Length: 213
Image (cartoon, helix red, strand yellow):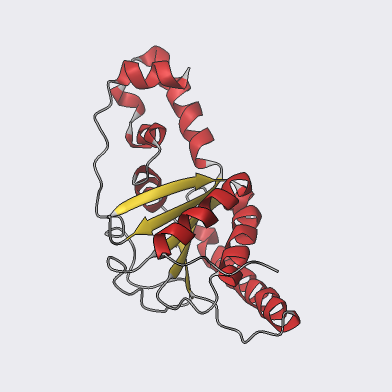
């Protein structure tokens, strides 16, 4: 069904955009987001339903990438379904989750007898959904080009199919790895593909990431 829809839409070949051009100037804690174009970046993207899975993936990678200060881990939370009057409350919830995650990661380092040295971590809520769309379309999975299609651009009979596929594509725990040398983005989906992502990171960094404990 998805393949036939792609053919019906006659989508153009994907072009590599400026991946981080749509990022805000600061993360949710008010920390400045540095220029990421020349650094290896691991991007975690999830909606609220998949935030815990993405968080677990992020913690494993943060531990394995210990000491790799050149790597930036960016977490983007799809909050586009949250109404504006709840933004302040939701921001508080995100900050609380960040503190809990940091405490859990520190405990993991302590139990392993290691100094706390995770890579730089930034968290950005996406209230409009445009950042999530731009990031998911930037990777190597061609089906995510569907996210850029408006229902008004397709025949009426295909609109429900398009909207259903768009919701399905977004509603996952996504892991994107930006390679500053090749200027490419590899896209992995859900914890089942975490090992593939770790192997890709090892090759990209030209040095195996540390084994998790």
